[in-house]
Length: 247
Image (tube, rainbow, N blue to C red; front, top):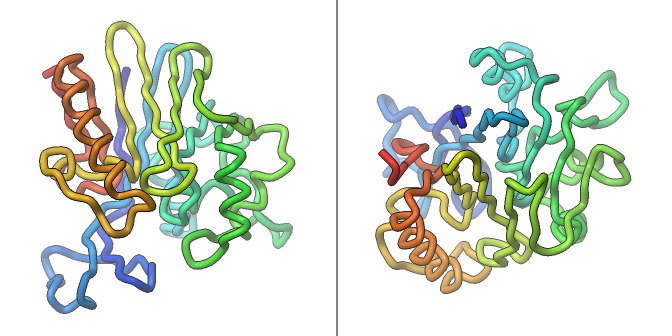
């Protein structure tokens, strides 16, 4: 399997839940509001023998008049029309911002026209019940009542080689994925396991729905991953988007 990180840049985020671009060569974190977190926004493509998988869809920002996620895909030789599956961990605006795109003033449409989208039904309902600022429902409307969107119910498998599991750790209906092919296991923990350093240190984050559970799951995944030689994908890690015990 081939992994391609699709970085959208580094940002700070504070209690306002605004993502503000951060340039490490010019900006100082101390100049940002107290408690600001420094994060990368980084969807991933995984090319398997069966699919071109996209894991989460970023912020939905534009670059040179094009959806940044589309631009990043094309920079890596992938046309957005070639993506076959979009695997969504949850629908916070930094993970699902480019799930849909505005077209000709007709509202948002799916940004990957030939892909099947996978999202938990309870997560979709939760997003619309909570709304802004964590969720931008206008961008998510295209996920409702859409034959290209497969609503998941609990834990299970997609095409036998993609496993998904609800954790309820970072958010109530957050889910994680394992992709297994030819003896290789890729794990995507999204915001349950967003950065390498969080896997190595025990702490409960205040911004998680269940910080203690997230902490315990990270330890469990890290130990199992070391034993079974997993490759980890870290959506918010500035320096380590991919970490593999198999190397």
